[in-house]
Amino acid sequence: MSAEAISIRRCQGLDELRACVALQKEIWNFTDAELVPLRMFVVAEKVGGQVMGAYEGKEMVGFALSVPGTRSGHIYLHSHMLAVRKDHRNGGLGRRLKMLQREDAISRGIELIEWTFDPLEIKNSYLNIEKLGAIARRYNINQYGITSSPLQGGLPSDRLIAEWWLRSKRVETLLATGANPLFEQQSSIDVPAQIYDWKAAAETRTHAQQVQERNRDQFLRAFDDGLAVLGYDRDSEKNGKFLLGKWDENWSYASKD
Image 1: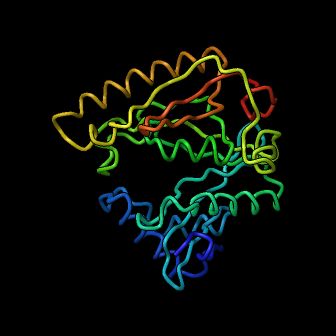
Image 2 (image 1 turned 180 degrees about the horizontal axis):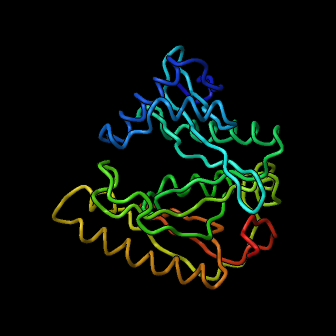
């Protein structure tokens, strides 16, 4: 079934929130201690967050979870999880869930949704930067510690912070034309397609860690120089490349202290 044939909406009731917890465990294979529990999904719904579900008939095949936050007196949403079942990926469903988050946020006067993402995940990086129009200019080292998820491959959980400025010229241009605005590229950071195989096998994990450490240094230096991730390329061999430049819009909730 195509992504467009799947309905997306706010989750309703405890049974649908329990389905989010079950799908989370299926996708990330966390230990019980690391799962986001049912209570957190309930709280998110009660305090101004978002729990959006994607349904094939009555079966949940994806969800998005966000919680409210504040910075420098501004309210924003932190999108903590975006989950799509493996056999429903690559059809645009993740983007549809994000667009429902955007629509809901704008209806409440919210300008910013943020989330973290693994810069070694090529498809997800492409979605965030090229399909949604998020930017990145902050990098957190080992944000969640070493997690139990096989997807992490035992590496430090380094994360880029995606800033999705919902009313920015960048996002509105992307939605209107299908492409991000042009910019002057000043730097790039490569992610080899073999990164998934390297993370998965103990004997090659050091290769993955070397890429992570090299890229970490490059991101930190670039962000110190005032650059931001504004583009993402994928070549015919499925290698990824972050494209960095100066963002010409003045959207920020950075502390003035």
